Image (cartoon, rainbow, N blue to C red):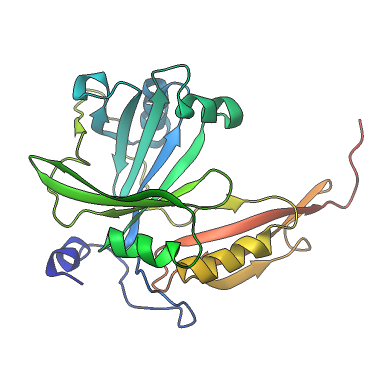
Length: 260
């Protein structure tokens, strides 16, 4: 691992040492870089997350920065970065995603030391490529990004930023606002849940084991998680150092059948 990466993670409150011995950990992952939501109104959503959760204005990309198909507002609180992206064209895949799913997560970006290697390691193990390794540059340096598909239409983006000193990513400019509410104490992303269809949990558990080198370290069944009319089962996947945790949930039959 490069000295620059070690310097960047030195202020993180939990280490990079392996805590789950059964994890293959061939990437490895340094943490969550950002989470990108596709939303119907990015500016309004940004105001909501600032007002309700204490996020701060951080970066912006849109028509003013050369984008013609989307606008993105980036919010930050401690080590959490959210991108809120809205389509600027009616036939945009972003708009189609929002029409189909509503506001929701599209990209879970993972911070890595080597994005090209991470993409190669996962695609050779069966991952479907979303974006081949791409070098993005501006006056602040360069970022390498590459992506793979996971469950549904969700994407894992590998982000290598050891040679970048800009505000966020190339193509973004610093976003300054007079309205920055007091942070609410959010520190970092602890885990992100993937809700999959009936009978698909074990399929995706195996995918994370084989493709990402994760380990299943905790499980819950429908006897532990249920209401009168609904229930679910869950298996929690983690990389070796525990920084990235993905519970995979699938529905189960509730105690009673609901009828209209």
